[in-house]
Length: 213
Length: 235
Image 1 (cartoon, one colour):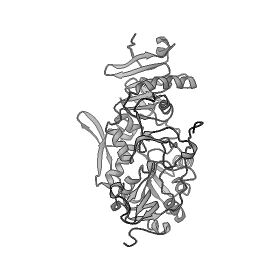
Image 2 (cartoon, rainbow over the protein chains, first blue to last red):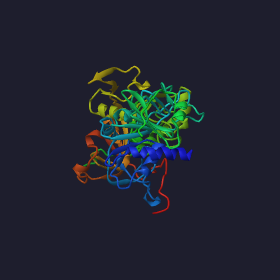
Image 3 (cartoon, rainbow over the protein chains, first blue to last red):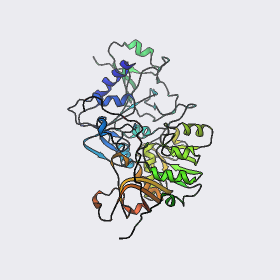
Image 4 (cartoon, rainbow over the protein chains, first blue to last red):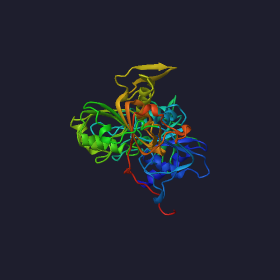
């Protein structure tokens, strides 16, 4: 399991280019922060009002007034800024955030995303996810390819309530990478040691194959 | 200069909040929440409140205290996953809930405070959030209509205030507080320090005092941390 997540993180970090402003969701996306090359000028945005998230603080430097969107104590990097929630979402909705990396429960072949609610179970709320998927310039979803029962999380149509419709640009799983284009869903990469047959078998959605090399 | 907008008693400051009133409350998680005003409301027992806040505290702190005391009738929030009492009251039908995307909630407060009754946003298009809302196309893209929020009272927490209610916030405890201050017909601001008029640099004021009617010194703050995360090893 830990291996699966690390594989996803290692691939996801390649989406981040030097100079980008990036929002990382809770869970696997948060782990991507640790893998960003140290010579990059990348600012990480936190919906609660911080552009320029730093590492977790040392014990003496913990400040209850400085947290990330996951409510964890953090630090701010040099060059960081603080702002209120309306300005934070002006950044997000207004297309000023280059990239959002989010977790997913289901993704459909048309790039719909479901990641906030399971009917019949407790509804926790969508937080900032619905704003991020419509507002960020590029939306990358990271998730395990199949669920605990081995069923595909990549569907023809999402069964869970949507977070956004046709919003995903790229999907990275532990097995493969897909792009969502005007021509539909395309398989563009296979993870090391994974065969096309395995991906086809574990993917409920229809996709075309566009592997380079 | 006189006492300005400074009140000395939280009990008195929340006394005219009536049963059934609508309250907008600042904070994100437990960060930047108006601890003292919430405590005074719990003490007073004001009921049937509609509360608008990004979250609803945890079981034993923040707005969770009002919930545990069954003072909240309806909650408008974006994320409520940290609270078991919330779950119980929601599932039993005691508590009415309106989930609103976080950015939409922030803008609804800003808009309400700015005299804008509604606005169009792409957030939530094609999702359950769009149900029953007017849709409109601008330049080929779909948007939904969301309404501004004006509340009877706002409860906010700032770092510093002067006696005229000019507010300065600290780090990420700013979050929803300036927007809550704008959206309240009467805004009650509690702070860690009250300074004389003229001591705050006008260039550094985050919320101008025009949005604030009552200022109270909160004294010592508990500032509970929801998830303590520290860097291990190299200090």
